[in-house]
Length: 379
Ligand SMILES: *Cc1c(COP(=O)(O)O)cnc(C)c1O
Image (cartoon, rainbow, N blue to C red; front, side, top):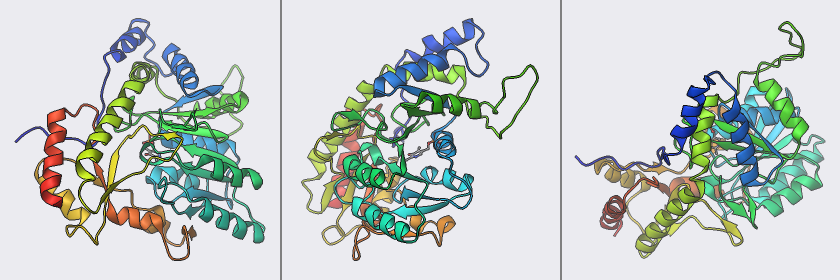
């Protein structure tokens, strides 16, 4: 059988080895070291923020952000519903309760009107959330002006989950730089990877300093081991940061490759009545981390699950859209605010969506194969 065509897998640029070798030659295998410092500096410069703290995962970065915002037991945190569960798990780690907000059609991300209703209700109950986690799905930025406007009006801090949108922009500003904190992930399937890793970014350098302190077991300044607060082992290792530095050099190239993959799918498949693709909001630029299409059940008789089976039979990896978190058994009973009274956008996207192979290593011929299988299956 031919080689499996993957959804999104690590794609090294060739520069990574240089930085890893440096780590070995200088014996900086231990956690922390020059690659960590440089990776933080280079990423902060790339996205245009004052500073960054390299950590072991995107999830750890969200956990630190919530910690820095003082989220704790009894608090609530608003969070996009249509996302990977890692966006919301740290809310529970902090002992707080998630409240889920639906998507809207233009970006598939957090609906400003649903957020507004959630805030109005929370305000009338006299209990505003401690933070709002806004996710930028599959590379597409959320409507940041509208969402930030609402959060600023209520004076509630924003954590921007840009795990999937590194390299994307909203009105010329890099995704992940709108809230008090932004987070990125370098997990193996993301647009650039360190095999596992993440980054917390902010303009508040004091807060980032505290984040690094918490992420290294919260060691007080003393000759002996002394601790006044509970810390974490969340830092990124110097070897992995070396991979990250090499990957950062090819990030823009990866964005171009991902966008070209999307454009080829869209050109070939949107000719089919009932097939549409994830939109790109005006004045935004998506990294198109994954190419995602919707199948209108009124026009296409085969279901997304059957299409996934056909693709899998051809050794092609594809996935459904994230299952909304308000539908997850683990979050049963959590509050949820739909886009409108008669429409829950995230559920429709979940029911109709398919994430297509978007691997930047995929050859033109491999993508042709995917397209041909889909043309034959959907027509
Ligand atoms: C991948 C991802 C995360 C978590 O990142 P890890 O590095 O895997 O912990 C968080 N949010 C979203 C939206 C993601 O896709």
